[in-house]
Length: 449
Ligand code: GUN
Ligand code: ZN
Image 1: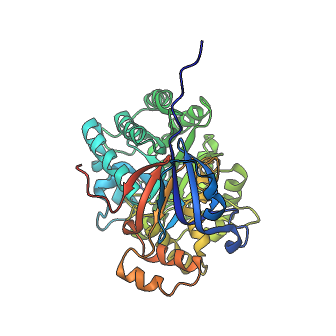
Image 2: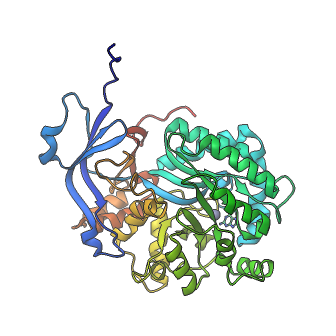
Image 3: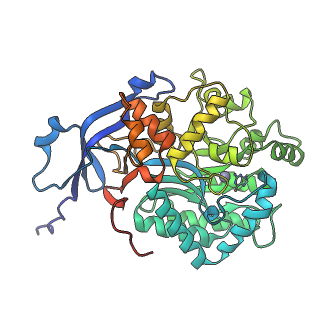
């Protein structure tokens, strides 16, 4: 018997200036860590990158009939990675006046209560993912709500787009309004059912998601730790030491623990693939614990400035003597933009306020390869190289008249990247590719919703 003929590979090629990384620019010289190919070719086959290099060197390797899309005035980059974001909070972005704990009560919980309705959840999930792609973001670690249907809606939409996403049901069994609380056993059972339905299905990955220590009893945190051990490759996401009043509250709720971080460590929640949002009010001992455990901190500067939470000490976190993995998070809806470019703008200013200078290569590393590394997904996403998944964004450094006149003065790729991160936003995202498919084209005619 002869086997049926297999489908021909789906091929495409992108040509244009490209940037990616050969090393961590916080540990190596930033300019040497950055790879800049002024006229690159990226060959994509069945969703993966098969070749990357100078166009002149690779032109003869392009299989006949492969469509080549050229972006000569743009910069090709790996798609952005957002390591901390709440999709259900998209409708309440830019809510006036409060700091963290009051903001949760007044705006966040009522907004999240609406996700009991699966139709609403589906609508917001669709809008959120479309906005992510408009921002050039192709992967994210995403909080849903306490309702399993909010997770179902999110993964269903992500699976339809074939985006690589990490997401999970919020666990919350106390200090939250009626309708937004689960129970330790109920939250465990619902999470396990979602894990078995979605974790590792296509590009979807599951994160056990206790919201933060104030909204989970010790019993729930312990069960979350036990959940993590039930299946391979699960993620864990939560919030850590974001706001001083929150830190004081956690000390009252868990008087026997050495620190806020120790509350999570005691429950078995701190290890590889654990992503802790914020980590502002932490000390050297906490950084050492994070380094030893291999967990990651998600730096969310627009959120931290918006809520007046404080300044993340990025350069202390990544100190080469005991570097902690750090990714960049938009933290919508406390964050004020889904754009990683805008998030880098604020990260630069926060670093300045602590007396440090965030080099553009370090900035773009955080938004791409560093984010992927903090999620332990750097063997699949975050860089442009053969074997990687073909998630790419095409950045336009001359997207506005202001940017165009500033770009005229740029003599180096670092300077051009700096212009992008200070002045760019979704207008600078010319196109976004997911597993080799063009899912956002800025200049295409608008599609019906
Ligand atoms: N801490 C607990 N929940 C949240 C949330 O939804 N957003 C932020 N920024 N911090 C939190
Ligand atoms: Zn958050």
